Length: 393
Image (cartoon, rainbow, N blue to C red):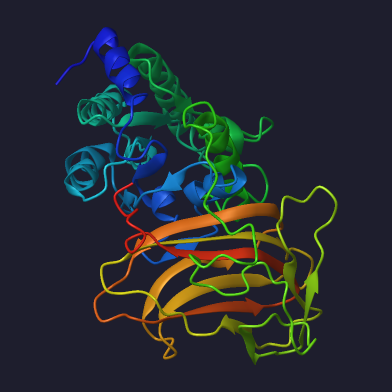
């Protein structure tokens, strides 16, 4: 269905009115978008995860719908349908497609036709599309390079025609001297790695900053927060002075040291940092965890948030992950707000909302840290939105 510029503008204007979630953002696409992770693990190679982090969680992430190998036709027929049929109705959706079309030498006008149908399908559903240019391709032939340039030009012109925002991933990733990825930005010829994903995330965060309202996740700011399922959230209590805050235990130290550190001047942190340092790569993994969390039932909507920073890139490099499990068995994974995070990161906020699965009434949160480096956590917060009567907001 075709849509005029005036109609598109009218729909976008309506998006500024109260809706289900004014800052809920999803994405559809191919393997580059799928790198954000699955329903459980939120990967460091995902641009959506980086955008949320670099914006201090100014927006909330909705499930994304992306499948490796998908062309724009399949994104239109399958990914868009899956998004529109899901229980989530985001306010904005990033559309990143065309890399596989270019690889299959599909005509640029045909690719743009599919993208226009995706954009208008989102608009007609009351969702604001964010058009995205496709990344470069290392070693592209002259034919492929021409198609990449023409497609990205067409995406920008189409976005202007429909009066929708556009995020220029191509510019954020492309080395002007070579037309390839900047060195270290990709894992192969077409897929951004963690450095590339961070650059894409910064570009997306800049665009979303002008679209979504000012918002901060509901983190604890006082030691006494009875609505927080996590006790001692600001890491102010260490009864035995062992460097590990009360309610946390070290399951496997593996050469790590722990301390509670006062934030530096100007750091936006309430309370103290819980700091873990591994001076070398011992070949094993340090695990530290919160005491079993209760106060949840199947179907409850939960909000999990915290402050986070890390220094992991120095050789030997480190890697950190955080996983929430069903009770102490630590076998059933529920959500991993950080997964294989391996890039230095300044102090930012992480925030996720999720639903408690069937047969789960207790939770276990583990932090797993391998390699060498330092990880800091602060303001650990978990709220039961359902019992608070807030699940529908």
